[in-house]
Image: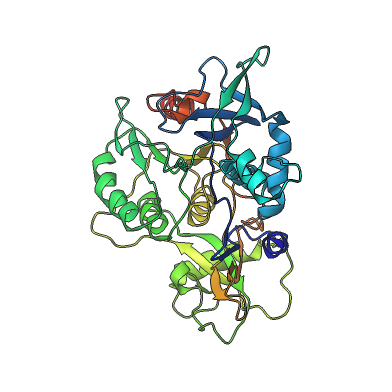
Length: 402
């Protein structure tokens, strides 16, 4: 745990420590419900997402007599000192494991285990905060899964608006872009939902960006980065992030002009010390894919604190486009080109960043995330099946007003 706490101070959202006897947030017993955040309030809902824990009292006030915010604060030393939304999002999910928040007086291992399984009081409040009620909760050995949320499919909405749901940034996301964008060709607007998307690769970003370039539009830079030099890294260390050195001879003349213009105004908030590579760029351009065409309508991308890593890049790069609006809440923030290694004596597995990654406006992805243009918080019922999706409704209203 000491190594975990030290590593978290560097602000690397991808950093992690694992060993045969330690993994953050693991170990029975667990809460028999799930928790999530809505604008500074913690909502509790059934683990099968069939209902709120108590529809009339959706918000958590305390766990076992301890204020919920105190429990959250106790988790923060074990979480990367990144953006506030990253810290809060991960801290709330750590509360799933009871041993991480429940306090036990001295009494030895067996007493500790017995107390962990003892029922505890869960204090809940009404929506307006004027009423509370307390329920008794029995811990369980079953770890309730969060899974991907919202659980929705890409489709054409009744308002003649395309809805593209990207659950993870993987090959399926790329396939979905090329499968659905031709179907959305004649729509009046497009909603891209990446809420809860924890990342993956950048191919889906490149694919969608190719559709957003009109006939007369130039490519644009979505990311600048450098990496710490190491004999373990190849010269093309960032190639799988689709980044090349800004002085590479592989750029087209139009791409090189785009990079020169963007880099002339680029002022990184963190000054790069010695020992790092030259600057690299990610350029978004037409891909030449046979399904690609210029989609010229307005686009709204839905975001939340569950967005991380490659999804941060997706949001940060696309929000530069003049026809793209980000809606919902800010992403967590992380872009690292992580490396993994094992400590020779203990066998502890360590993961940490090798790259410093910036938006073209100079902000690091880590520590900030990507802010939205229009902030909309979900309703508590959003987290259950058939619940109200206030963010999606706001996106539809926004597009219909354009």
